[in-house]
Length: 329
Image (cartoon, rainbow, N blue to C red):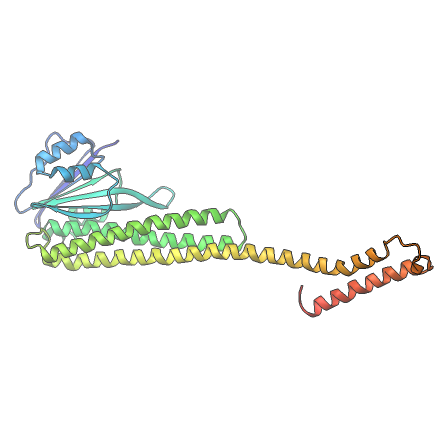
């Protein structure tokens, strides 16, 4: 697994930032009056051991960072706080997936983010820090945590737009009777279920985080940051509602597909029923005159055969006219 370490040390006056393609020989110190954002990609056990010793990370947090199958959650440990969340990221084929787990550990003067793979959604945060845009350099580490969460959730909303476009394309394909798309539709529904579970866990995590800010006077979050976190929570709620609407649309598409199949089967059965109804009286006539009785005067009549054919033709024409009049086909 490739490793990358980046850090930014900043305050309102200045900023330092460095990038390493492997674990540095010496980790940066936490400096009073400055915020250290340490971003680690491809964390391993040896590197985690170094970080634990350097920044006094609780061993349970260290275990959660290394275990990338965590649900989104928020926890407080003594003088530090810890968040895990799923980060979505655009891939080469311009689609999204539940790409990786993002772990955020923060304490006074420090924000440590741990990612599974290279690439993230934090380019705008780095730009704001390096070019001193907005209020991020004037605020403490709690505002940086908010900015990171905001980027992650904003990417969720972009992902919802892509899912909506996929839903519309599936509907168009199903209306064109493309049978293979029903499998795609089922796969799409399963994907929506997965993201619904993720969105619920994310909303629960953000709700618990805001309750913690309200109730715990020792939290690293300042009261003013809660307003911004409420906005992040609202965006997560919007994403969850979008997923619910897409689930309903997907279920409707599946119902539409089977309704089309049933309609087609109904049309086939209707045609077969008309044909069977027409042939019933013809079969009766054929059965009567197919009996091998000795005395059947019509059998010796010169025009009997033609009269029978004419009668059959009249019956067929009459029944077709009746069905047409009734608009049965």
